Image (cartoon, rainbow, N blue to C red; front, side, top):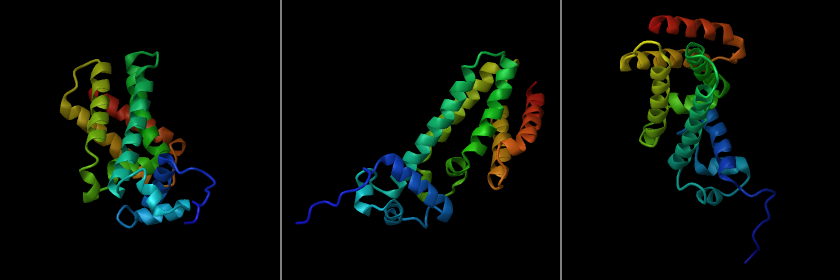
Length: 189
């Protein structure tokens, strides 16, 4: 029996998720195999199965990490010391900034329509949307209905989705983002 080949770096979950994210973005979820991910990293495919039992579980771990990051952004905005009107505006802008600063994550979180992973990706979006909705309700001067919070989310999502497909960064469209958020705020003001 030959000794185990020495590796330059121990394979981590984060390394696997980063390589998978790159390949999923380039080729699409269905066209990527666990073997391809391993090959991208220079490891055997068996080493990936040490961390994830299958591709769907790997995808789910990536998405959960991304939703936690989005939730952290929202928590950070809610903890800022400023008046509620300003904070509400900053939360809406932060959602756009998150989406355009993390395009590949955003696309996988909200835009991937693959049947194999849909059942894995239910909890994260619902929890993040609930946190977003609660923030709007808490900060608004007047009562906001469930339908209004959903419409606000969809409006922000549409803006981000449009610019995710372009080469523009948040900084490139920041003035448009402010105009969009001001338009939304007028509808609930």
